[in-house]
Length: 356
Image 1 (cartoon, rainbow, N blue to C red):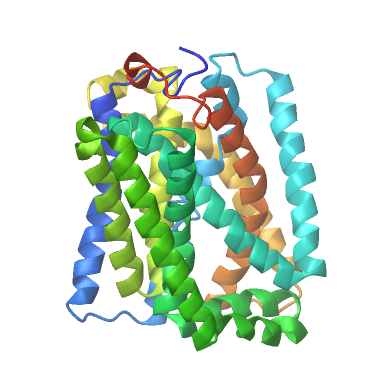
Image 2: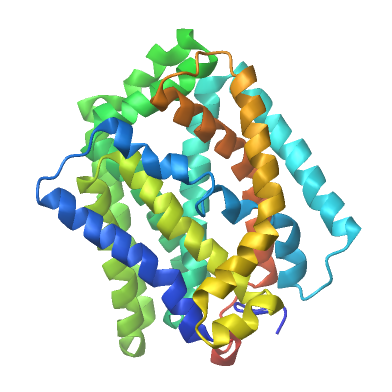
């Protein structure tokens, strides 16, 4: 059913829903409880999920962008599609890479905003398609995207300002040590209070609008949204940001996008329909392997050209995050094209279009 939310989906919605939601729920829930119990993790170990994301869902989740749009449109993958997506990465990603070298503070700030938009964008589609259709309507979906993306970007700033500032200054110092001091102005108590108040208003306002638009028939779907939102607030308020973002990136955001890709992959349909999740993920892995390997090779070259010293674990992960930023910008364009093809922001399709 090209053109609607869920268009091109082949696997059963139940299988897609379980694969999309359960891993993130388990990881976020268990980790939150562990840290609420008072467990602490040395910073070197907190970096492990981000380091693992090179091969574990994180970097690979964008490695089949060249297949995503034609599959969403139920079209064959042609050399023209490959050239178009390759050109997108070369031009858009290359331009953003230049910004990192010329204006690193601007690059870091734009990376935070870009991730805010993309991670919010990445949560709306699975809620609508693999959940129960909520949120409904363009305004509610945009508010939900703004809220979901804000949680991993802003809650850690309020809850762990010193850790957040450390990551930001590390990124800036890799490219221009002289401008790192300028970013400290964003971490004053007054600034954090303003962020906390604005974020609380956004969360409460979004959930209130969602409750009203869901109506009595949609209360269950609204509860899913509200439960996830509050769980993420607790997670990012409790778990140190480096560790939290790494876990979220691998097991929440990336898995949800991978499931979206599996939903339009005719080769994964038999596995999904029979609940053979490993087989479906292996199919994805085969598709993602070539460009994941290429990205790892680019990462090696990236370490050579970054001006700052890349030796300590935090600086190694920081340089990797900068490359992720460069790759994220064209990836967002691809996902936005998928959103447009599936009318995520423009219409509520009939219930039959949400099925597989």
